[in-house]
Length: 223
Image (cartoon, rainbow, N blue to C red; front, side):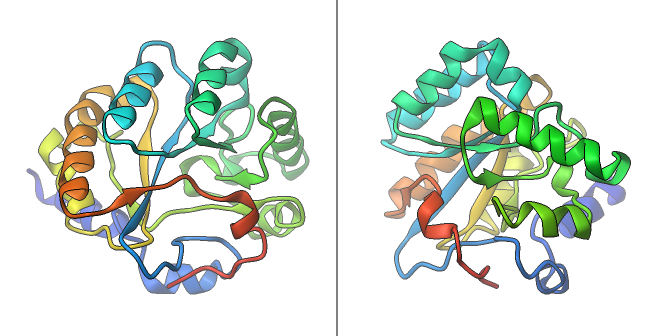
């Protein structure tokens, strides 16, 4: 693996403490006193891959949270229904997968609310993990903004699949919110890493739970 790739892994897999303190009203981790992990999947639902994710989770009795793109929900209502029928939670990932840093504030806020009409969740994760302070202040009135404790980096095609798995098993701890991606770009890395992560932590006595919208509503983030 190239030095540049190693640096990207070290910088982004686990957000540094100063970023968490700076983003004080966003949720990075769930405080727990038991071996529990929170798997999350961004960008779906996507035909072919979402079904595979649901089957993989089911094999381990695992529940997760899917941060869905509103447009993909509109295109794949049956997959969205399967996610809910499987006992998983869903969250808002904007309607058009917009980057807050590159989008006019009014357009971004409207896009999030448009996605809410399709998804109906008060959990929100900004695409790319990027959100302006003003957008965050506005959206915090209506949503719990969910970031992460561990980023698998499954979307990075320069990473070997085993490194994606290592990113998770080397950093996750009780209460960690872990990010995977429900998109074609991440397929190869995800299909290698997810079953192994599920097996590793299941053997270690962990449970995989969905994020609880009511529990997180007024919660301060854990460090």
